[in-house]
Image (cartoon, rainbow, N blue to C red; front, side, top):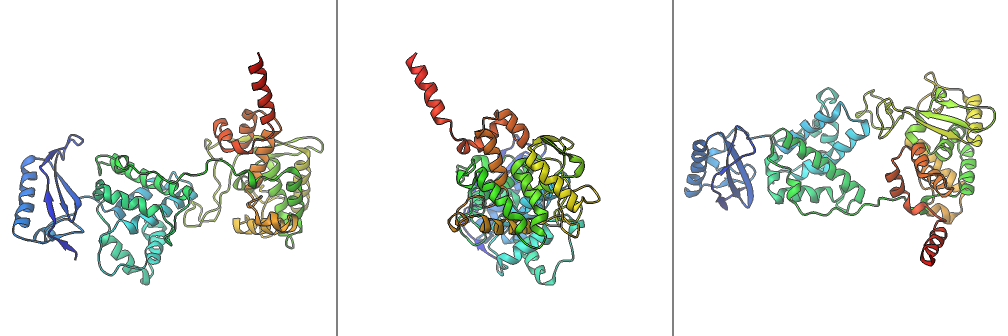
Length: 455
């Protein structure tokens, strides 16, 4: 046990934010702020008197709980620990969250929970703590398997060492949390988007704590902390031109025995219709109007994002979900050019469709995993590109086909409202994200400005 004699006390404060517990006792132990609320001033004064007498008698105060040793055993818990409330937070969002959102929530907490602990002996390995949180402690009880014997000590230590949630009212504790989400598990600076997502998890958790009256206010609002700036636009270096896109799509069917051929239509949908990978994975025959001549139409209504089985409702790697940023049963219509119509007709003629109408699946009828189609894509890049292009960011991910499609439409002069409708964006997000990919308009803009100056 870590004890300290560095103890200071504040005067009792009247709390106006609660109807019942309205008197606050505050003190510090080893410069860490502690607090406890009481219904009446008399109870608060009695408690503060006990603390003062213990300090005057020369008792050591436990740093982890903030209590003198004489009060340690008799003191009941005063609110949840951070780990306990993290479990509440995950459970509160589980039913309404998509699988990837559940995974993101837990991923953020894997950094936070091990950081917000007392300095107790026998700290487990970081990897053991993350594994027990990921596979057991931060799952709903009906999702938990049997806890491996080797991980039981790590869970017991975390439950004992986890700081009280109320400790985050101390700015130093809150900064500890922010520092934890700013680095990777290996201690390197985390990517800006990763930091942003993890901070969102912490923010939402603390907002829930305020809502449930566990905290008087969100401690993040009192911290002056600037997150790393995340890139909000598409990198133009990733965007292929039509000739490069055609070369990539032509290389895809040559990869593997049948895998590349089965994925050719899926990649083509990403480029010619700007589908997200999960939207292409969920595309069904009944969503496709494929005339023998001319333009066709895709009516996108479902997406099948991939996630670990522990996060999905179905227990499979792919859950069927509504479209991103849209109401549950909303759809999106995308006119498609004759070249994509021909590709999809040929795919259906050769491979048919799954029992539920899905177009793209393995030879065993399963959805393609992201690792499978990413592997095919990387091999297609090696076959279609020069060595210099392969080493560059150019179309480094299948998702970049969607970026190329949207960039092509915008540069072709298609109105932003129509592009946004087809791509499933709002207009403001579309123009902000693709601002660097809109080319060929500088000369036109210069002429307009010159004309205005000459008037």
